[in-house]
Image 1: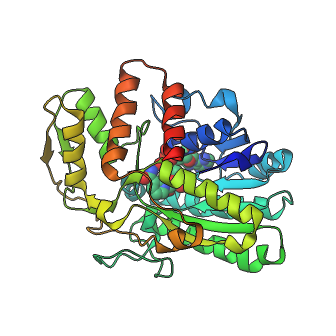
Image 2: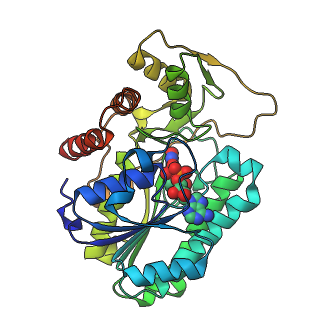
Length: 351
Ligand SMILES: NC(=O)c1ccc[n+]([C@@H]2O[C@H](COP(=O)([O-])OP(=O)(O)OC[C@H]3O[C@@H](n4cnc5c(N)ncnc54)[C@H](O)[C@@H]3O)[C@@H](O)[C@H]2O)c1
């Protein structure tokens, strides 16, 4: 895959201090893009943004996505050609604890980025990053398609369904009159990869347990999810943004996920992790009392992105787990993470 298009391009990313945002910045700066990031400070210690030293390679703005005036000022001063919107409260369980703030960030954040783009004539391509959870989950064994009904169950998923609708309204009401602006929403499955330190996500839980030599606790081992390496959606966002920049006809909504045989149960993913980590690591099934609702089946149909762009998954889930373990072991043994991330990115693009 050739991303040399990005050399010298001005790219504005919201949520650049997060897990996906940090990988995105690394890929973009490796290809010579000029990046401005807008987000809150990293919210965990440690965090990938600092470990990968993203700050020294981009223009780094600490700002709240709910602050429209500050967001507009940043975007208008930078005059980006491409905008990727990732800033969000991205955790289902957190959204049960604080639904109001999840809705504020995820819905008004989308309204604000759409509004800021409306007033910024330099933007030619905009990708809104939502999630596989935007669909009304019917516990189907087959994958959701882009034209299935949007209506996420919990506040996080539902706020992302709303983010899709906000984007659609801005396209219909304002952007359709702009011949030069392409807009897409991307609905990616669960990502894994080096540098995710989030609470309540299975692979970060595995790594924390493995590092402290404890058993891994799995709450929903039978849930099926479209697990994929973080570089899969990151590269897909960049590819779609590039294609829309060249021709806005590529605007649309796209699912990004693994092939059907890599949509696996969380228990299977954890077993894979234990085998590849070694050191006798084990997991235990521990359902919780008063557990919040989580869907059992969630698969994506990725025919559209394959058909439209020829994009297909590059790393099988087992390879994604290997790369995550490689990153984590390198991190805990003090190796140079910048070098490792660049190696993984180049390998991914070659495969
Ligand atoms: N990680 C996954 O498995 C996954 C799957 C599908 C979709 N997504 C989506 O991808 C995006 C990035 O997810 P992530 O896993 O990197 O999450 P993350 O928590 O690591 O990063 C979230 C980013 O959003 C920023 N942010 C949060 N609230 C903000 C606010 N009020 N103002 C400004 N910035 C704010 C944070 O500072 C951070 O930079 C999110 O939109 C998420 O919904 C993630």
